[in-house]
Image 1 (spheres, rainbow, N blue to C red):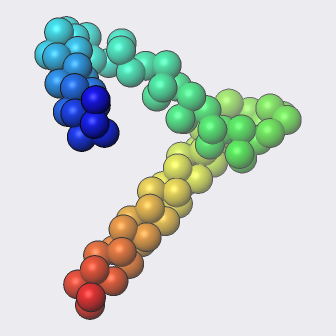
Image 2: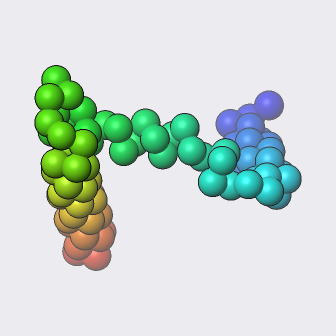
Length: 83
């Protein structure tokens, strides 16, 4: 099987799987929890801060991360436009 055929089969399987998923939130909850937990561990690796303070700091860390991704995406688009 060629790489293109494998990619096509994988895409078909992924779309079929999502088509049969009624509770999308439940399906992605463990990944979401891990992603958000990353920022809590980043701002409070020892778990010493109060929950509300840690949550507020993690929210800012997550926003900073998303803004960094947006900046890198914009730079890539600028680079492609200049090519």
